[in-house]
Length: 343
Image 1: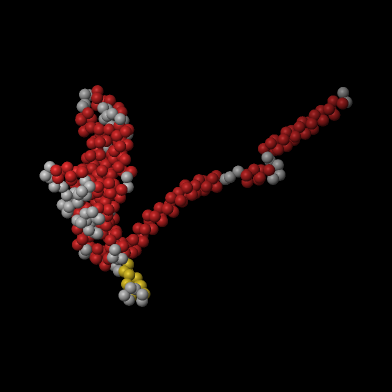
Image 2: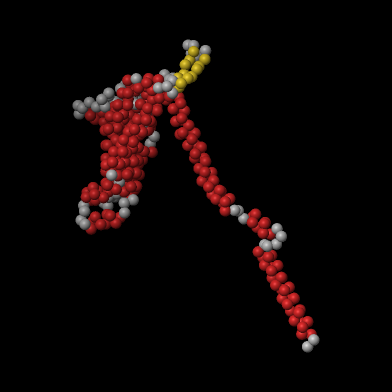
């Protein structure tokens, strides 16, 4: 009986020791020991650090592209703008006494706009675009609709065949077509001559449309693929519903396909408008075979000749800015007209 209180007093002590041991084990398991909690906190990245790293990651990935874009696109535009407002004066017969440059205001632009040949080249490519662009857009639309029709055979093969001319560089394409334009080499001219018909593809009245033929041959397949991609995005349920209602292929094309490929048609037309004002390689290559093509036949060729034939880089920069401005205005007007019509 006398040993009972002692045993009772020892039991709480043992329980307390066991509880303290469990507490120390829990602290060891959770890292709540001297220096443990701080070390674990320091090892884990904070939420703010992770958010800053996530914010920097896109810019790090975009840095190579932005550097190349700035060096090859933004910087040349800025240099051309600055050069178009600069006048260079050379002292001496060959500039041996020094070269000075200063602000010219709009003198370079006035000189460019006062060049009758440059203005004539702009009117020439505008006429080119009024005829060639609609013909090419209609042709590539018809090809795309035919290739995406239900009765089309081997559409993949013909898509690749129509796209292949786009893979031929403009200079090579012009050389290939020049063999069909030059008398003595062209089988078309020989066949027409045997029938008493005189063909002059490189004459003053026909050389512009000979260039239009090369451009149409080169870019119709490219524009066709853009329209084909838009046609493939049309839900198949629309075609099924139209066939259930008894719609003919012509009605499907007119009422379903053409309205839904309007964005693609607008895009290809804008590309074609910009490309029209950038005509250069075709005229440059054909100039050696066609006397009707002079050094200022197109606006780009005029700017090139002004810079490298006459060494007037400032006026050439002004001409380049005017060409870019004309392309922007024409594209903007076309987009406004199409948006107003669609709304």
